[in-house]
Image (cartoon, rainbow, N blue to C red; front, side):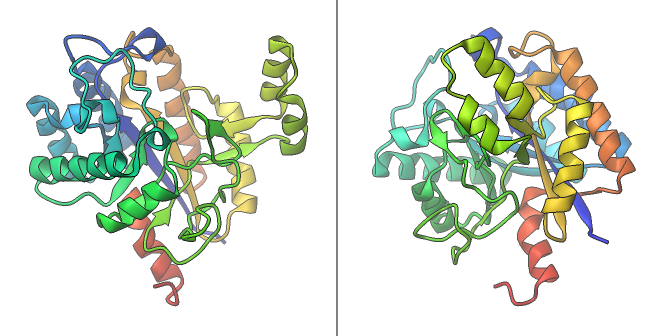
Length: 315
């Protein structure tokens, strides 16, 4: 029987609002209430752990850092999440939305932003980060090369069967792998693991044929009937999650590793475009489903050692 693990990954950011517009002055209710009062107690009650991927503006807020250090002491993992608007070079002192994407940067700018993010994390928490997710899921092969150079062990930016923010990750495998230096969607020899977000389409061929229908209503129907289902309580119901989990258990090699993702602010009313009560209900239902199916907690940074132990030939 396959062993089964779930990674609960949380993009950890300052407070947003409708349309993902940043709130000013910067506020962090989504850290203190979203994580401290809602998420962390829920995870501990059901028996899972969180991987909190932290945007730079959060690391510059002392109270948020104190809370995150506390959840780390209770078993959580802390990693990095780049929204480049909040970092030099080219830091914005006031930005409406965090929409910058890695591919839009020059080589030098992305390198320096990632280096500054890593140094900020080390200064803030006292140890180097090993897990990363790009803002807007916008990692490229260049990103992976830079992360490897900076000592990261895991990236979790790829979205199989999905093109988000113009970054087409549709060819990504659904399971963790070490990418090739020639093609980030092909297993290879890099010293960094890609651990994709758990996503499967209901019917990939039908969706590819229908997703460009001129009528918006029909496109939405095609997506609902045939399109990708994410392990994301923001938009995925218990019904869809059950289908996704059962399908992944059949397709995924041993051990099964699922990656759930959402934002901390999605759990607090008014801090994201989504209804917080519904997101929390979906999250609770999905976590209970996974616990009932025998899933064990896992952190992103633990994936390399787990898979190396599973296959001693992996270097």
